[in-house]
Structures are given as structure tokens and as C-alpha cells.
Image (cartoon, rainbow, N blue to C red; front, side, top):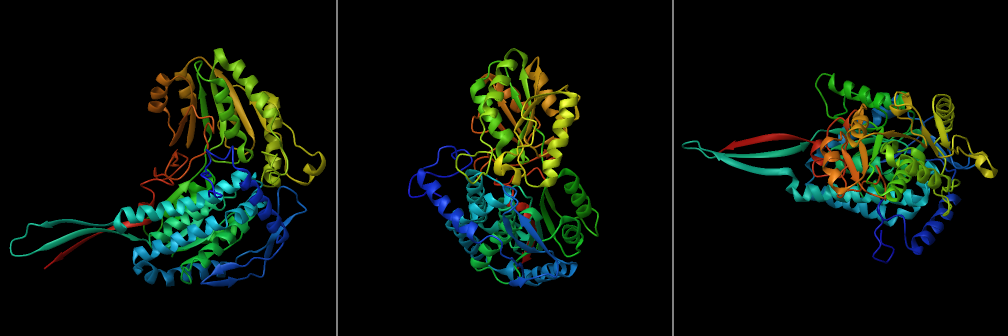
Length: 525
């Protein structure tokens, strides 16, 4: 997305966009608001599908705004979607890979053409500020294009091998990567477009057919993705979209015997249950699970504290702390702890909280009533067991009372306090003073999670941090975000330990192969 200039929107460049970007977003926002409230169907076997039971989505920005009415799928819908995908698989798998790439590139182009309209819808549905929302949609296009690039660079993953030295015969050998079948994609509420679209794009370009489901809070984003794939010209049944809650629809999908593989993004508990289910059937099936984080930032006495404070605040409170990559723990060396805390508190108190579709508001609401209540419970507990330095309250002035707004919160507590360990998906970060860099790294690694980590310090300290930190994504001395801001092709996004099941990164050179299985072929003439 360039807006006629050299500007390219990424999570690193979104802090100073050109005026044209804002003008186009405002136009799209007005159009999308005028279309809110419509009923949206599911997409199964190339056509719309509706259910007897419906559910309504209201914006977390303002509960008076009805995003739309959506279908609550039955088990019959689940079976119909999987059956349609299974029926479409043989022809799609045999479609020459260059033709699949062409169709998926068209989908990526359509996403870019619709980036403002989709971005406005995502902002309203999730409660993202405009730059985060536009960034997510642009990232989706870049992910799809990246996986197409990978398919092309690897020649469709067909590779000739040496002939066997057989006397009197010619034994021709090659290795081929082939799709699994029906691939299930379950996406979360916080990145409902990118974390559905990236996985769906990878599965499709590899030759799998797809059934995908986004979180119930963000069903519109899923419908907009299904619309893009339909308009790109995918054959009927190749990609199917269904909606409904995780307890019934999600479980029915996970338990379906004709699902060949799954990509899941969400909580550790749910991800581990899916991983176990896919490992314990008649035969093991691939499970790509990204399961959150409790991401730490290490700040040494040699750090540029202004840069560190800026990066920490951006990563702690971007999307209201509702990112698996959000910074939620800061370990700072004692000689500079007081100075860093003062800077963090000052920047946090300056954050504009409100309707995030308004240009001047950087932070919006949390996603729903449950998150709003979880915030209240956590800050009350923190006040009892530690200290709240700023924040710690619901915001309800004026129109804020109609949404789920929480003050960005910084706290301190003993290191044995449970919020140093538990992922909560709220705008809350804890800061603690340590004596040495090694102590900071030890405490950062003392977690079941290993997604992202940030470092601020001297250049000669960076190798020690990188050698020892147990996280899949690391950033050193980065003001754009201490622990957030990965972009396809630039920062591969992968979780270690309890943050991921495969050790392979979204938007990297090794991700697409997970949607394929190897076949060795020997033909003797």
C-alpha cells in the first residue's frame, strides 16, 4: 500500500504515515459504518449457507454499534463444509501449482485494493486504531504473496535426485512435496484477518483445501476474507468459511475425522488440547499451533532509556495489550530502574484512549465484557499484592461508558507474584529491578512461554542476550516496538516452548513446507 508515494505501510513505518492514508481511511470508514448491521452468511461449497440459530456482534468501541448478524453453524454445517472441501481436494491438488499461485496472487491483490474498507471494518470490530488495522490487512496481502513467492522459488517443491547405479536399468528418482487434504484454520480475535488469511493462503497455495473459522467476536473479518477468496476465482469447495462458538463449532471441527491438518492461534490450553487430539488419532496429523506469550524486555544500565521506554510502551499497550507478542514483563538493572519507570509512567499517562477509529486516539477498548472483567480482577489483585504506578481503572467518561475501555497500567510486584507468569491479554505491564544482565535473562527465561523478547543495552551486550534468551522472535534496541512488530520476510514470527508447536515461523522460509508431506518417487526404465 503506497498511496501514490514511496510510503510502504508496515508495523515499523506506521508511526508517520502520509496525509493521504488518513483521508482514504476516513472515506472508507464512513462507507463501512453505513453498511453495519447486515446479516452475513457462511460460505460452504461455493455458495452461501445460513443457520437457524444466529448471533449478533456489537463493537467493543460502542455497544450501540451493531457490526452484524452471523450464523451459528450446526454440526451438519461443519460436516457439510468438511465434505465440500474433501470433494474439492483431488482436483485442487492436481491443479498445476503455477495456476494456484496465480489465483492466490489475485487474492493478495484484491486485499490490497480493499485495504481501506477491510481495515475500517477490522478497526470497528476489534477495536484497533486505524494504523494497526490497516497494518493487519496489508500484512495479510504480504503473507499471501510471500507464500506464493516461496512456492515459485522452490519450483513447486519438486526436486530431481541422482539416478541409482543399477546395471542394465535406469532408475530415476525425485522428491515431491504434496498436500495433505482438508486443512482447518482457526484464527483468533486480535488478528482475525491476518492470522486467518496467512494460514489459509499457505494451505491453499500448497494444494490443500480449507475450512476456516475466526473467533465469534470477529466474524465479519472472516466473511470479508471469504469474499476476497471467492472473488479471486477459487473453485467451489476449495475454501469454506463457517461461524460459531469454539465450544461447539470449534470442537466439532477439531474432532472431525476428515481434517488432515490444522493451524490454530489462541490460548496455550486450547492449543495443547488440539495438539494432543491431532497426535492421538488413528495416525498423527500435523498441528501448527501458536499459543501466546508472556514476553519480557531486558533493559541494562547502558541502555538508551528514551528508546527503551518508547518501545516498551508501544509493545505493552498497542491493541490494548491483546497481542500474543505484547510486552508484559520488564527487567531493568537497578541503577537505571527509577529513571526508566518515570519515563514509562510519563509516556503511559500521555496515551489518548478512546474510539480508536478517531485519528488522535491511539488506544481503544478491550475486546469484550469478559476481558473488561478480567482487567478489573487483575488490577484489584495487583493493588493488593503489589503497587500500581499508573492506571488500574476502567474508563467511563462520556461515550467511553458505552465501550470496554481500560486505563493502560504499569505496576510493580515481588517476582513470585503470579502476574509475572500468567498471560492475561490486558493493558498491564509489570516492571522489576534486577542486579545484573544475567539475572534479567534468567528471569526472562523463567516462563513456560517463549514467543518474543526485547533488549535495550550496549552493543557488546547484545550477543549475550541473543545467545541465552529463550524466545523465537527477538528485537534489540528497537524503538518501534520492544517485542512487537514482525513483518513477513523481515521478522519471521515463531514461538518456542509453550508458545508454539513446530519451531517454524510465520512469514519465513520454512513455514510453507509444513502444509506439505514428502513423497519419494523412483521410476525404473
